[in-house]
Image (tube, rainbow, N blue to C red; front, side):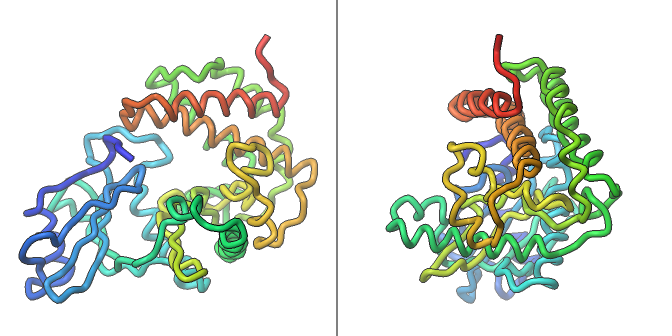
Length: 328
């Protein structure tokens, strides 16, 4: 996926990064030692082969001069913190961090190396799988997501703080940041921004039922899942993690919106019963938040293809309807 947030570097800089991470005796040589991995939507990632044959992935944060959405600021630091938490407290397969550099000496952004995992991306291979195999992966994903959500925080909000004891306040602020980002760049939602705020306020009472902060990935969709030999081999891209309500996880989106697929197998693997009335309202609010981001981010990422923007606006109208607002 093309985006102006992808901070591509020259082969000379990439070689210098590999040398800093692994030492001059393992510095890449010859031809064909680096290739860009194309599935990411935000950061650029490269597959790098070192001199001794070891294969790594280099991930580089967006350029310092490119404006990102408020919640994306400092995303690489968030990912490193999330990897540390998940690695220490679960047996979820996540990448090991070989080396991280936040000095901005070799390029204008944070970057880190991790081992390359030779496995299929579920978003790519999933549509070609027999239905029962895909269902098994979805159940595994639900169980994996539940493990991640088992990590408790001391407050709702960013991993590094500051936190808040009220999930209602934190989530309301999260949505407000997204709306402010959209207003700043004059993004047309197809709805008045204040109408969206009214809808959130009308249903915000449902958020008070959430009392225990849990680590949530939020962006754990098929594209961030690597699979091999019938098992999840690795979960990648943790830069949007925070302490919140597990129901905000992507796997639950399909309970409310058909566009996100059937959540049945995910929920079975997670061990979650059918949503209650209050949970349904909360999940619809989380769908609203997601669709706002998917509309607004197209401007921040400089998309020239309008397909995502148009699709996301249609889905935003659908979820506004689920929350009681239809066009007059």
